[in-house]
Amino acid sequence: MTLSNGEVNKTYTIRAVNTADKDMQDYLFTLGCYPGESITIIAKLAGNYIVNIKDARYSIDDVLAKSVII
Image (cartoon, rainbow, N blue to C red; front, side):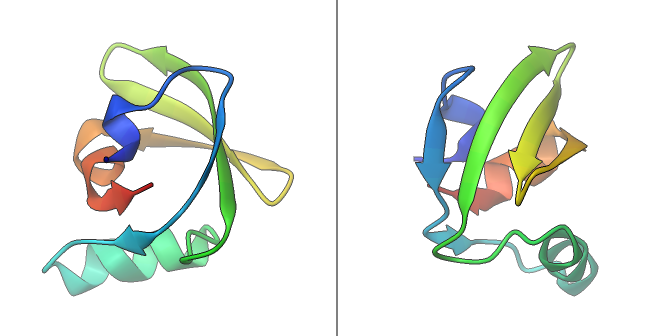
């Protein structure tokens, strides 16, 4: 299941980052989006997701959310 299919206010464990775009993968890694890390969806707003990774909140778009396997 991808992060875009997740529920708001629920914590998931990242299983993988699935993208062929190296820049996108590097960006997600700079946010701390590694396999084994916890990620919580705080809100879904107009195709964007507010997520919590390692006690920090980030806004990611639908394309990025579909790349995160939970």
